[in-house]
Amino acid sequence: MAATDLRADQPRLKRSLGLWDLVFYGIVLIQPVAPMGIYGVVSMEARGHVVTTILIGMIAMLLTAVSYGRMARVYPSAGSAFTYVGGELHPALGYATGWSMLMDYVLNPMICTIWCSKAAMNLVHGLPYAIWIVLFAALFTGLNLRGIKASARTNEVLTIVMGAVLVLFLGAALRYILQLHPEPSALTRPFYDPATFSLPLVLTGASIASLTYIGFDGISTLSEEVIDPRRNIMRATVLTCLITGVLASVQVYAAQLVWGTWNGFPDVDTAFTYVAGRAGGPIMFTLLNITLLVANVGSGTGAHLGAARLLYGMGRSGAVPPAFFAAVDPRTHIPRNNVLLIGACAAAGGLLLTYQLGAEMLNFGAFIAFMGVNLAAFVHYWVRAERRDAGSFLYPLLGFAFCAYLWISLRTPAKLAGGAWLAAGIIYGAIKTGGFRRDLVSFEAAPES
Image: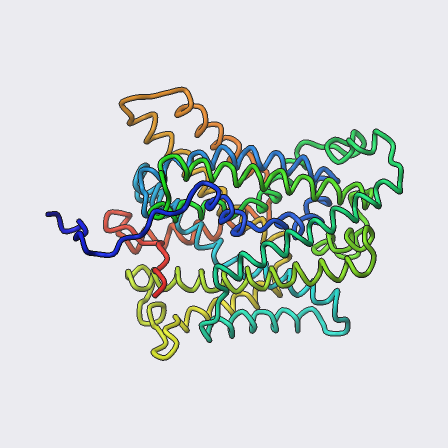
């Protein structure tokens, strides 16, 4: 018997998750209120065409979701763009993908810190922005140092609460819009306004709006617990992106009709809360502020720990100095050094970056991973496959083209900052692996104990 075979009496993961279990899990990962945080930034960038940017991003994500689902069949226990690209294309390209993913892990707590600080300023006046940044960075750090994290059930409850608040907002928005008696032309303006439409600006907005869908690839990590994973992983990934796109489009469409213009927000980063206030008054403004604040605290804490675990995995494999990055607190069993480092980065990034730049830099890394996965799917299912079909040729290449175009459409500051990070990583990787001739640097997050 092979060494990897399981004994008959050895415990195995139970294949109990069906299609809709996976879809709900994906929606929990993405969050049903995902576009609310970026609404103001995208509206300003795309001159009000937020619905259009969400739909463009959805096309790119649906095509990419097909590639993720198909690659999950080939690497059922990995579920990582780093693994897909390194295995199918080249270890050096896999490394570049992993390094870009590392930037996303580090940036996620930063943008959560920024958004939480802006939302808190809406509720409690008087404290300077810098104080809120330090407080939330310290909160994320403290919670993770104590080993406190949300359970899956807590995340599910929070998702249901967010869904309920979303329904309340849509009800208030519908009532407000009906009272306005809008002209027919106003109803199509969120999709296309001839007075402000610019394709380059809409594509730039779409490159930011794609942040709405970030997290859908997490479905592939459940491959070993899914009934009929060869079919259900891909179907669930596609359905999650589709449902997210429809929900997001409805939200931002209603918001655009309520606000009536693409600018004039008291605060761009928390613009959606002001839209809610106009639709439902002070109670809706406060309710949405608190809901999104709690959601972002949860996301920020989870992202903080995820970044610390990724650095721990890299330290344990020797990719970065293990004496610092692989150290574990003997009492809490937490990679304390990494948690403190990410906390410091969140505070510094919160003070130095804008929410928009942080989101765009995160998408810079995400689009590199998405392009890589689409190419990996094309190579595996078309270039190397014995049996080919039109979908194996068309879907991954279209997915790559859409993601590449959105990546190119990112603003210059994001491309410069992301490019600098990528260049530094390639230099470090080339030195570490002797020109990528030795073992590949690992970007797999360490499993939870």
